[in-house]
Length: 88
Length: 495
Picture 1: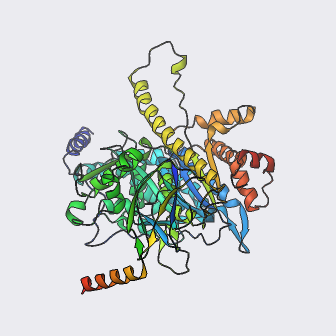
Picture 2 (picture 1 turned 90 degrees about the horizontal axis):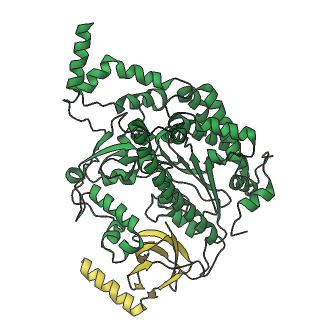
Picture 3 (picture 1 turned 180 degrees about the vertical axis):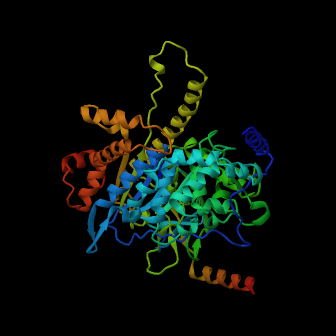
């Protein structure tokens, strides 16, 4: 089992999930075994919703960097309204 | 006399007629096995201690007992309170003989260790097993109730150690996470008696007697029969969702190239769950000694430390919060700052004398080699993986880019092995030769037990990483600690 290093960047501190399991926080390098993961962030309002990441060939001084962005306030409001309409 | 012998022979003949008795119960509709254990990591100065205990009959049970008993003696102060190292044991993984003491410790804690010797190490268990095996009631059970030879061993464990208690007694806050490892006879995969694995087969672990788990972990092939379990997934858990980690591994484009072992684990779990696109429909499981797949039981520790899909056994950061997380998450978020991994290897060497004989070895000797060489090879492979993982964790503790919260992590790999007794010291050499000749049975003589006590304590105290752990915790009264030896032999990247 080899260890790799992943840095997920996001404007806010959020929990990072690998295949639905919490593994650490954004903006701090994390350790994960070599492999392929679906990376998501806890909570709403991020873009993209998830990233498929093949994690290999990293080191503690050169982690793999994966970026998420904030959905704009207008876009996140529209998304929330759309979801509410869908639920109703 | 003749009539009695004929009756016995008839019963033996009928023994094959009774159907197999399966030793597990299904989960109720919509139920899952709940994890109630929660390792407290609220004090970063405390180490998280993980223990693996190998196979080797009563020799392994005794060595594990000596090491645990010694760990209990070392105290340090944390948050103005005295703590013992046994208080910090969060995970215990075991196979075969090691599973006897592992389960006993998980159930009764450090306070129970003083009862283990009179309960299990002192009695002549082989005699007990022999008497039970020739008891006519045993023959009747074999003939008519689907019972098998392994039940004799299960009954011994229950009578002497576990008193009929089930895994429900283990699954409580404050108890360490116990991983009893057996081997799936059909595939050679490790099958652990854990809530997650029992979810895979849709079976209620809390109703499972502890003695069944220990017996499965120590079911020596041919000598005893395998423990039989039913996989209830198809009938009692139909249509449940497949965990994401399984889906990613089975469908991921890169997974087979980056993590083939992970793909195989996912495939096995999916097959057990009768998941979509399963390759085998597993309805029955026949479990043998866990040492066939991994005689050091480090496979369980590897998953517990390094896998994001390990059992969530670390208590959440907020007092009273229901959520708990994995050890990996706790390391990544800086809540675990010291990890001590103690691997207890009770492997012996039987004196077969092949290398000094001009006569070609016979069938019995070949069988011995054919079974022991692959076991040793499998074990060596998994052991190397553990060494690599711990070395990488240690190196990561030195810090790096991206403000890692795991910077400052300290790792203490403590591998206990009879070959560490110093060949340069005549007394230790004699002790090594003595303990390596202790046979693999369920009985250990008083003199052999004394030799193991001496060897176990020496091995622990002489280990530089154990000395380093004591040094870093400020343990008092450990006069054998040599600070230079400890710092040089157990260098930390975070130093």
